[in-house]
Length: 577
Image (cartoon, rainbow, N blue to C red):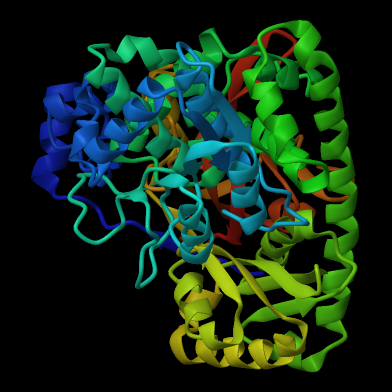
């Protein structure tokens, strides 16, 4: 599928000039910093070295004081407290965080993760019945609860109070609970993009402050927050950047034993990046809830000895292998459905349904289909007599609002701009499929249906190495300090033009390209690269210059470290030689 290259507007010349002078960097680096809102030395320093003391006062969040008071009352009265969370990475990490914090000096605490297949997403009546039957008088719900109006009302009838720590978009009505959600009306908290685990951390921070503690008391919890931030794909800006920056420090220097074991089973060594969190740690934690139960993920994250984590981590790793097999098979079946259905093939959305698909993998398959056809996508399966599924979107299209426009056909739904979950009666699937496509057709632009590569700036190979010809260049060392990367602070993408094969490029496994590249204007600078899924470009690369869009990463091999271009796309070069 052809991609659109969109080069970001160049910042003001005076801003770039000031950064070049104040920070002592080249124009491409100054451009990248200015694009991220940095305009002078002090702002650059704050961005490169976030201060944990700059975290916002948790009591700026609406209802935070009430939440802390209720928790302290429960502890003073020896009440049983139940920590309740969703079964994904954000939810299980949040449960582990809050449970870890409260049990540091209080032992009447339990936790509950709903069964994906029996209960579905979020707070369930079964879960509230568990709280009632086991004499829990306070429930702290994490990464869920904003829309659980009926379930929380049911709990309240039996004297169970609920504190909701959530980041999902609220509906018109909130539950009868103490709601901590920066997106709720009337909340003036300065940052509203925290994940569920992040809001749990703010609650722990508030309790800790009330008790006279410092941020160092809860610093060890930041590895959980970082994994949740990476897995939930929330913006890597503002407060999230501070939490992620220090969370990566904990992950790389003193991670909890559960993370250590997962990384060992994945044979991952060396310094971790956000990419490692997203593609190595998160899928394995998610696999517990997808294939078995999210309780196993919490057990792993709470474990303190190797004896505790050994069997659990191996089981979770095996669940991840099962998940991969299901992912491949379901994606193949879904793609065949689309190819064999003219209506689906030509629609501006994808809605596919098969009763025996595994519920735990529908979200992953929706992402795979979006990658292939690049349009808003919903994958549905049957669970407990209902059609349930996950939605994924394309850049710029609010899939949550599109689903909301079909709300009369649904039993329940919830989510974000780019991802959502939904449940409907089986007989409503065809009507929903038609309506959803009508909504998408009426509101999506043709441009949105073409994948976009957003490019930070155009550079030459010379800009990467400047006067340096070996080792890791200063350009990359500074670039690396922009991490942690994520939405709102993506790894910079560059374009270089008039690039040719330096003579040793080759096809790998009939699918990928291992590249050795030289730019015609600078024949003495040869850079290695990799282009996944782009073997079809090999002949074109041999026959003429190309323009490449790429990111720059370190390649570690046999004890050596060098730079590697991660090529995202190629186009035949149109610039005159």
